[in-house]
Image 1: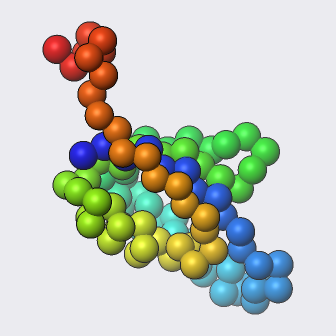
Image 2 (image 1 turned 60 degrees about the vertical axis):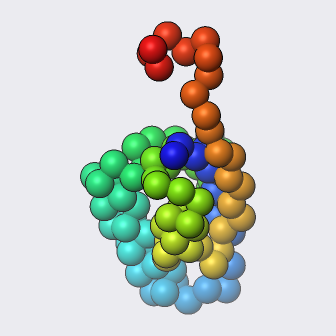
Length: 94
């Protein structure tokens, strides 16, 4: 299943700088592993924001929840999920 996900990151200003750096590094490693596995095939930064639009390709809602809740930055995120379906006019879907 494909999902469009918007993630807005809101790290508290008073978070210890070392904790912040370590969390961001773990986030990058985890997200890149998911990209390599094909579960996170697309990610785009939203200009001017600490946010992204992403496409996830996972088995179902439960797997997406597991993937998102395992993000190291998950406690600091507002996440909006939109399930996607094939459009009948998509020539590539043929």
